Image (cartoon, rainbow, N blue to C red; front, top):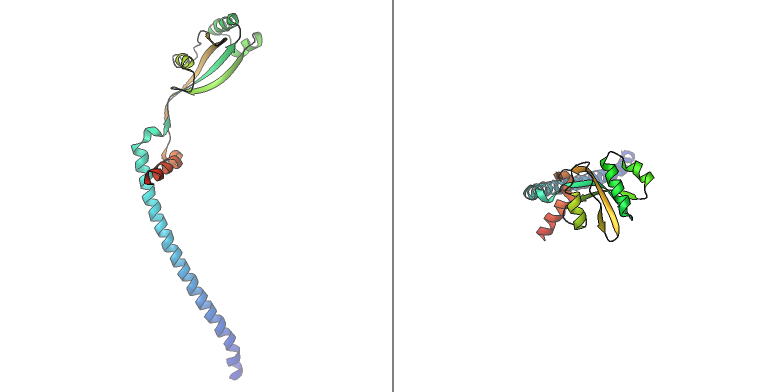
Length: 173
């Protein structure tokens, strides 16, 4: 009996450590569970605030209509007019770049400030595939060809979430 009792003492210690450890872990688990529940409720409230702000200010989360165009620059006015006329008669920019010495750049721009005023007026007046007459600015001649009109687009809440979050938090402070 004494011998069996001696063997049980270490088992009793292990059992107490196990029970105490299990109780502590269970308590930690419950505490974390309550904290998570609070966080989820706070997150739900925040998501509602973000959605409300987004819906009230949806026009802030999008882009205005844009123009995709080629800008061709020339140092010689006669070359600019020759290229302009040949583009209107069906030649391609690639063909004309081989024949004349000019650079073309494909650009995208919004109205109101992304382009010089004189360029903006021309580019936003053009119809798709239309070519502008040469315009002289500071000794360089420019011809523009409108490639595409990109319609106004609104970001979804998911796409704008970081911005909306920052704006809501900024208002909160």
